[in-house]
Image (cartoon, rainbow, N blue to C red; front, side, top):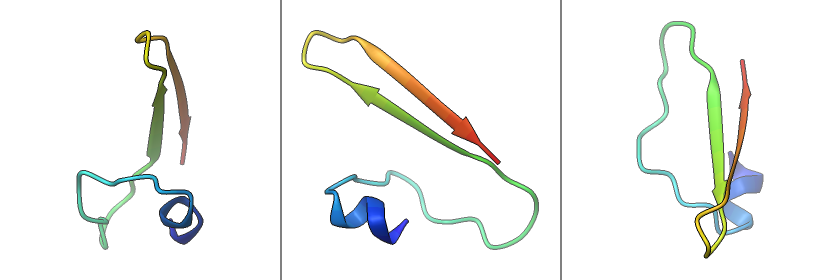
Length: 40
């Protein structure tokens, strides 16, 4: 998360402290092409 902040990635939600969760990052280009990265 800190590395993403340094890369100017903005987060729309707060981190979840309890429970099992994963992370999804969606990269969107100006022409609306998308790449989705998901991991747990």
